[in-house]
Length: 294
Image (cartoon, rainbow, N blue to C red; front, side):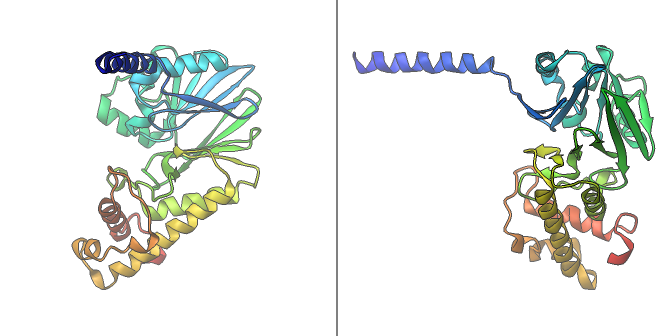
């Protein structure tokens, strides 16, 4: 076989692989407990609760993935989600809301998620929750009691954490980034570092060593890992508070690289400098920095 023939053969072969790849679902579906699955994809992790009453999901990633998500749900039980709970308003968690609502799913979220999605999509949009709540709410469905609890000023001002009582699992949304680094604190949407710390500490009190911990991003894990995450957050906060003493400006603090001792890897959209600036803004904000850190 001449080299050119070999080359063109390998090129052809390569392109047919690429075509085959396009039909490969961008989603990974994993059972994590009886009647509970997690779908990993290109946005926030989706939890799927299913049973005798039907099926509902926590978060729905991006609009372009809705058909794939529905297909995956169909493989679990039925492709129609009775409810979609939005853990917060960000597009990588709520992008599919409209597509699911058009199929008859009822969207549930905190009042602040309603406000932020209304601001983004307009007041008659199908992206908006049809059920919104203040402090907490419970879904009694599939012989499962799912407690939805709002944590104020954490990742955003509209975060809900979902506690599945029977499955002994918790979906933390983006209060927990299980990617080996620090979370994105969306200060412009009412988020705060101290609020994330308080939320994680509170959640830890309510889980045991068997609890399945579902983060907003990254792999499903356990209480031990969530404890390590809390330790990391507290250490990051104390490094920041120390660096910020004597009323230093944001620029001065950024130059000091206070988070460097943590030796973490950062993603391209959330580099060390951006993280430092968000933490600085969060900790110098009178409303969201907790009392004992002034």
